Amino acid sequence: MNKKVIKEKLMEELAPKRTKVKRRRKPMTEEQKKAAAERLAKAREKRQKANPPEYKHIHSSVLAKPDEDTFSRKNVTEWIKHQKGLLAEYRRQERQKVKGATMRVADTQAYIRHCEWYLKNGDWIDNRYGRDAQNTVKWVTVVPAGDK
Image 1: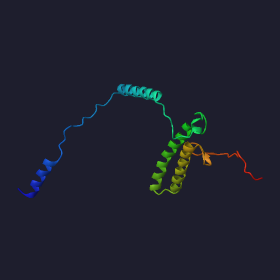
Image 2: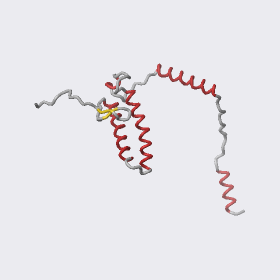
Image 3: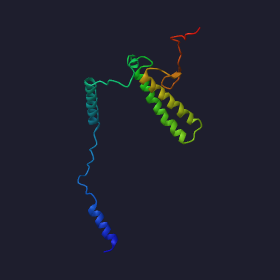
């Protein structure tokens, strides 16, 4: 026998043997899918009631705001999610060398960073707000400076 054949036989003997074959799952019918979705929804709801999230990483002043408030946790997290979707599209445009895409990527990253800062610290530090940063903040002096 030549060396190549011997080497191949040795490799076959030393190679790990497959013991189990992974079986494919049978496709679910529409009824089964609906039933499974309902079961999952009930299980999630039950787990949510038994063990509600504590949101330790979110500032207490943000958590105190109702869901209807403009700067509530729910709204700001939805803004972040929307902006991350836009960021993916802007990065794609940046790779394609679309004019102005680099600026849009930087702006979107900054807006996401500011939203996350607000959730963590309770201070809104951006001049714009909203899902697409379409609104302008109207700043108010709460404590005037000491000098006249």
